[in-house]
Length: 192
Image (cartoon, rainbow, N blue to C red; front, top):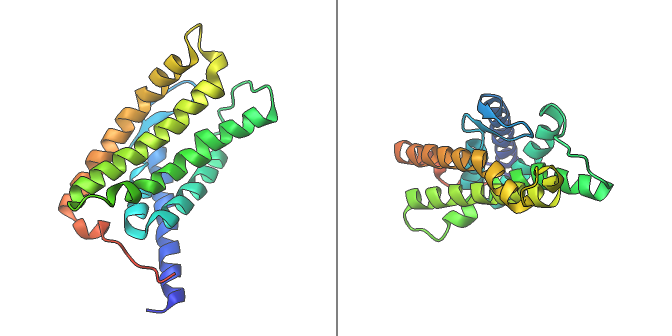
């Protein structure tokens, strides 16, 4: 297989995963008032890219998805930010870095000999990093909307209420998929 064909194939697969993730992100079980929701496994396509094609492609796919979420997500859920720097921080933490974090699933799975355990740990850690991005955004950017609570408490409860179920659902789905069709999680080489 030629080098160009391999890269094109990976790019097409990443584009398909972004499309699938976008569709799944619109199937919501519940949505919170200031953004955030539990969806029908919308994080799964992005951790799959990480497992199949590695961290570089996982980060790239997460970045593109973050940008797409900004455009298609009904606009930014922007709090009343006093400065452009705070607004840029919200965009980075709630969209760009949060979705790029999903591309790190393979990094956390590498130390484990058992692929199923690696998939479980990698998926959970990627979801946890996404939660950390949202948590930091809640503390640093959204803190002025906490209704008298300390910003870190409000952010922990608010973001944990949707990110924990979303991460656990994604982890369970990834483990089940890995048991049923382990070849999906095999590393594909793109002779880059």
